Amino acid sequence: MPTYIITGSNRGLGLEFIRQLSLPSTSNTVIACVRSSETDISDLKTLQSHVSPSSRILIYECDTSSIPSIHSFHLRLATDIGPTTKIDYLLNNGGINAAPDRTSLNLTSETLNEHMTVNVFGPAKMVEILLPHLHRGSVVMNMSSELASIGSVGTLPKATTYSISKAALNMLTVHQAVQLRDKGIVVFCMNPGWVKTRMGGVRAELEPEESIKGMLAVLGRVGEVESGKYFAYSGKEVPW
Image (cartoon, rainbow, N blue to C red; front, side, top):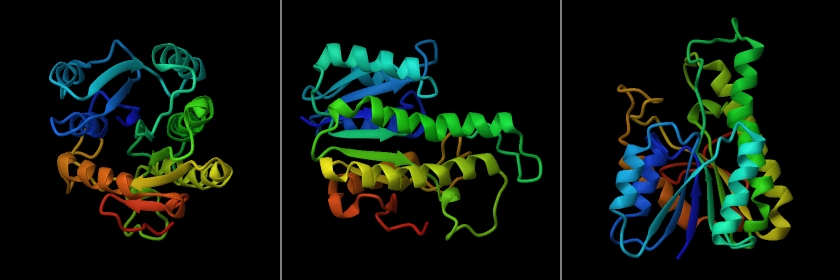
């Protein structure tokens, strides 16, 4: 039974990951991380109550912008599943686009720091703190964006702080892949496409079901050769 950790699980892409990983045909342990227990997790609770008999969903509070919160999550997780039990897949899905109207001409240090903390520092610390559970064959997926690809963006929208932070996440991914290679841990980054979520908006091109189905297919085939690379949900490699 593979074990998955998914951050940002209470809505959007994270919630759809949980749904597809707990379908009747599956046999998974899915650890769903939410930023706060006070957020609306009713949809997540519904999935938990209807989970496949051969799978289970465990819900934990883990604010990836807070090192104490990540440590607290790790301690509770280690108590529940064991201090070195293998996590097969760590999906650093949680992220923010809190200043979509900011451009390069009106950046603020506050918004840039906020995005770097959540979108870059959080995934870095999740890997660092959960390292006792990442064994040979474990896979880390960092959720990036097409807006992080300098080589493929056409007409740039606003969301400059978001784009900068996701480009930095891509570089973090390359460093993690190199530094974890000897341990046999695979790390790659993913472009989910423009998806109809609260962040993506109603004009987006993809339904969450299609994006997640594609990303899970990529997850199922990546190995050491793919470590440090940047993929789209379709399986195609994305230019940096």
